[in-house]
Length: 300
Image (cartoon, rainbow, N blue to C red; front, side):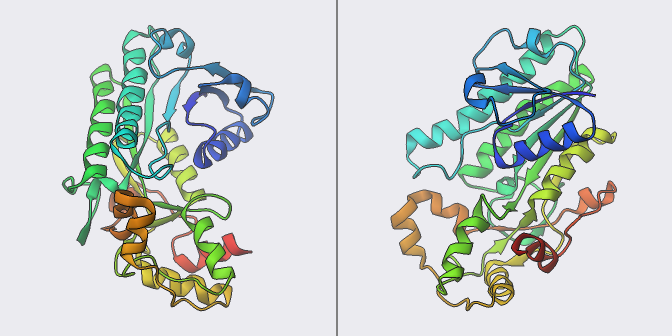
């Protein structure tokens, strides 16, 4: 299979590329800078310059069997202001539209488009939600809804479409957990905010495998990339502290987070009780279905 991928230099993208190459697929990486991307991947990965506003993408994609679309502005990359929020939204809308427009113009279209999405779709929800639940409220919910709406258009071309709504990804070196590990190592670990918010976590290897599962199986629509063992942040930090043999009682107050990162604090201080109901019904088996097994692998 020949697979094109955007956002390949990120945490998830790098791991997906490696797995695709290891299993013998051809990989075409779309990148803003071929020069900067050289050296990140093996020699048998093809690199193609891509700007989200480019008009000739279809010629670069001719011959691909599938597209994995991960690219988008880092939500927590900067303190939120109007400019950064616009970048978060526009990078996803314009980037996805660029991919979809190219598919429309292609003579030999890919069989499937698997797009990254986020559990931010559900907003802040105490009631358990799953793939069939309604969209929530808030900035991120609005962004995710608009993001996914751009991908739906390919179905009119008989191209299979999957949206992978990703939770809080656990990895030792990057992402939320990597930032939490340092204070725990210094014996000052604890929850952020009240700690009562839901923490829809997922091991990075399950995210990667769910993308490949979506490529390889005849499924359509939304799948949640979150563990079935959802916990609140207090419980997550207690388990993490116990496994690291460190205390977990130094909560970071909400007002401190709001002072440091502004409106973006809503991403950390709120959460939805997300279930991967449809993901499981479709036959995906989690590699790390519970928190202890996931943290054990990461902390070893």
